[in-house]
Image 1 (cartoon, rainbow, N blue to C red):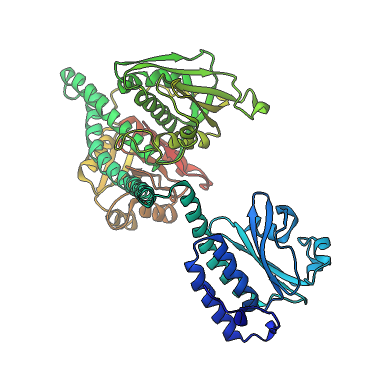
Image 2 (tube, one colour):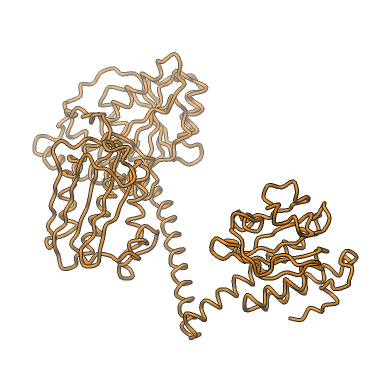
Length: 587
């Protein structure tokens, strides 16, 4: 690392006449030498010998960040400046540069508020530039000074920023080597630690890609699975509605229908887990939610763990997505179970009012929902990491490290807070503070299954490329008294509309080859605005549907189809059909 004084120093030389080609040649040599630097002293020495000449400056300085101070480590200047001195970080230009990670180019120091005028008054400095050094966070700064105003020009600034960038890499590497040498002189240990970091990063990347792929596949699988469930549900519903097979068939049909309903709920939970279903905010009775989850939670933890519930009867309601909250609670219970491999007691409790730390101004705004286990607990370092994605204390293959981050995300979406209390040997308690609402739970009336009397309802068009799904929907409509025209493509349906056929209701599946159901209803809503429309889908992704289109989720029962049709017909009768999409969701 030898930069000749006659090339880079100004002792008697005219820096201003330093040829341009030589300046950039000096920069190139400095970059090469910086790449070989192994400690801070070598980096500083390269900058001290090269920066002034390359930038045609009257002085340069290398300033190191030392806590909340700026340490002027080295300089090369026509007159001495501040070598060896320290200044508060917020009182000098180098401090501003390191705090903001930006270059400070000052053509006239007298006009810039960042310059401590008193400190500079006794110096030759009239203009200056300060460039940050550091890859992620500036740890030093390279300053250049001129005895005249008007500097730096574009080339001077480019030269200094190029040197600073090269020094950033070298300084970062040099500091890392020094710190690692201090902690451990064993090269094999360092290689092993680095290898583990790379493996962990690789595993995190693989896990992220798996989750991304799962989200993509879930939508497709849900659509196919719902297409399989639809004809089963419609056929069973017709049996239950009409009793056409006799009383002997009703009980098996009810059992089968219950299984189909559970399968439908399972698909919706998968979509919620993969975040392919938009949040469906509603009023939630937490006490009722936990009561309904009890069988699931007990089967999840097994016989060796006893669940204790402490839920007051007068607990206020909260506003949120019910399924997301259920998944969050299930994640907490699974973590508690895994923390007690030998069994124990798991307590689920709720209290109101409860004030999260730092929110004393809203003492009546939250309920507190807690899950506590009697497991091994966590130390402070582990507790600080548990909300990091992919961090897990479980054995390889036993956990993804996504449970608590998911819970945290759900709580944040609800506008709440999460807190973890744990000590080694004393178990763990995770508390969720959930914002309350004064709204009441809307109890939907129980759907009564009664025989449907055929009545002249008009003409219905059904468009679905899946034969069994279309056949089930057609059967339901005919049972309700409609004359049904069925089509296996949107184009075939559109041809009939263009010939003058005007249905009393048009029901189209979304995912079809060629023209999709969404494309069809867009065209129909514009060309034939008085046509009632229902768009059916096995998964989400219909945000772009026209405002006057009712959406119906597969699979659906007859009373759900009837409700969707009634809503679509009311919507079509409105004089102004502008507004938000009409949602019809079941299950």
